[in-house]
Structure formats: C-alpha cells, structure tokens
Length: 250
Image (cartoon, rainbow, N blue to C red; front, side, top):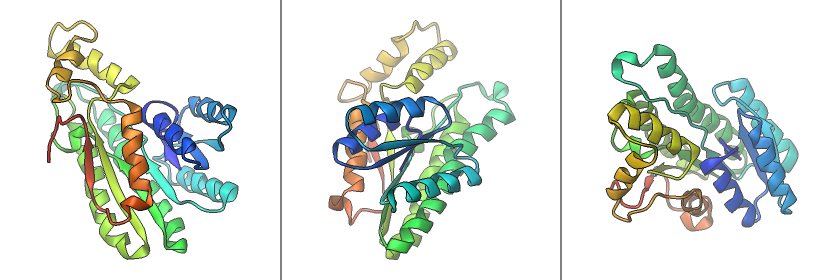
C-alpha cells in the first residue's frame, strides 16, 4: 500500500517495490494515480489504483478493505501523501494550516490506525511514514508544514512502542531536497519571498549547502523505504531516518 503514489516520491517507491515483486495498491486524491498504476501494469507488474482522501476515515477504511479484497493481506503500508504551502506569517491562513495538518498528520494517523488493524491479525507488518527534513528543523514561512512533519515523527515513535509486540515495525523517513514537483514549487515560491531569485537559483543555493552537492531522487528515497520494508530491517522500529545527502546529520 502506498499513499501519495501518483507521482514524485510515491511513484518512485511504487516502481522500486514493483521491481522487487510486490503487488501494489496505489492511492492518491488525483486521477494521475490511475495512470501511474497503468504504466506499471504495462511493464508486467501487479498494481491497482484507488482514488482516496487520506483525511477521510471512511476513504481510508475503504482503501484498505479494497487492498485486502484484491490481495488477501497487507504486508507493507507506506504513508506518503503530503501537501505544502508557503507564506509569511501574517499571510498564512487558518484554512492553509488546517489543510496541511489534515493531510500530513491526520492522514498519517488514520492510515496507521487502519493499517495496524489489518497487520495485527497476522502479527506482521511494516508501516513507513513520510516525514521531512522539516521534522528536524523548521524552515522560514512554513510553520504549519514543519509542525505537521514533527507530528509525523511523534506518531511514528508512539506507535512503534505500542505495536512492537504485535510484530509490526513503524518507522519514518525524512527526505531533504528531492527532485519532485513539490520542490519545483518550493523553489519558485520561496524564491519570490526570500529575494529576487530566478527559477532554479534558490534551489542551486540550497544544493551548494548539501555535503554531497546534489539533489536527491525518488529512487534514492525508494531504496531506503525498500530496506525498511525488508526482513533486513526487522529489528528497526521507531526511527526517523534522514535521506538528504548529509544536509541534516543526527
């Protein structure tokens, strides 16, 4: 199961899991997710797609029910759906705050809650939540986004303790600057607020501060998620792992 799987990091995770033989249930709140699944099927992989809103418990319950109906079990659940807006404090609306918190934090909670109910029955499961580098350090003009991602780390740690004796691991990933549509948006909007940047200039400035001197790719992130889903990670739980070329070290 992968939420936020229509493009970017989610689609990259789907591609990696497909190559490793997983049967996939891809979910997003945009129709592009159906094309992502179709592209994988065209390559000979098993994938279905479900339009779902992770802020709706009814949608989340229906999503997992569909997954079990289709494949009989849910081994790995990757909660990757996310959303960001960028605004100065005085311009940040209550509606923006609520939407970001609902998708990024409540959505992760609801997916974890329902995923665990299926995994407990088999005494096995891997839950992997997408946090952010902003779960390590909040950045300017995004207090709502930083709060939402710190929340993901808190949920991950709490549930890892609760589910540890149920055969379920719960971990989070903290991607840094990744080459996705979201970061193209970030470059444009932050660039306007932070100075007279041309497209790509602010991104390059940030990349210059990364020890490895490059942006990450969805494949980089997918490799970490694949490891956390594997038996090699059976003794890892409650962790939030940076994947950012050394931008944040802990």
